[in-house]
Each structure stands twice: as C-alpha cells, then as structure tokens.
Length: 119
Image (tube, rainbow, N blue to C red; front, side):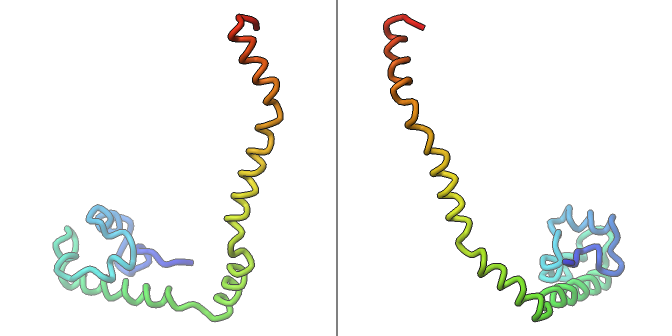
C-alpha cells in the first residue's frame, strides 16, 4: 500500500487538509518542500515543518524500495500484456467499421426517394 501524508506522525486530517490547501498533496511534494515554505503554513512551526519533511522523505524512500519478488511478478505481467492495447483498439475499430457498407444500396435508395418526395 502506498503511503500518504496522513501516515506521517503528527499529521491528522486537519493538517493534511491545510497542507493540501497550500498545494502540498503528496509525500513527494512535502519531502521536496523547504522548511521555510512549510513554516509559513498556519499550524506549522519551523520545528514541526522540519519533522514532517524528514518523515515524508523517509516514507517516500521506503515506499520506493520494494521487494524484488514483487517487481519480478509485475514486470513479467507487463511484458505479457505489452502492446496489447494497440491491437485491441485496432480490432475494435475494424468491428465498428465492419457493418457500415452493408446497407449502402438501401441508403442510396432512401436518399433518392427523399428527393422524389417519397417516404
């Protein structure tokens, strides 16, 4: 599970909302922020800003390192499905266009009938 700002000790829902109002919505953005910037946000002193930035950096680093076994499974799955999306789109397009020429004669006849005033 991916860590969130609310996972930082000392950051509850209200503090997370205040940070979000100041465009700090992710752990990465909090980890990159300066102490001075966070200290200008209401409810954050320089000491608290330093603590939450350090905690965000730590959680970000921890969430970036994943076990090798988990990576192998997902990369194998990616390789298996690589390029499948383009093929699916082409197939759908072919199916969509497949039936368009079937009623050409009827469509021409209808348009001629309309010109003549027939229904």
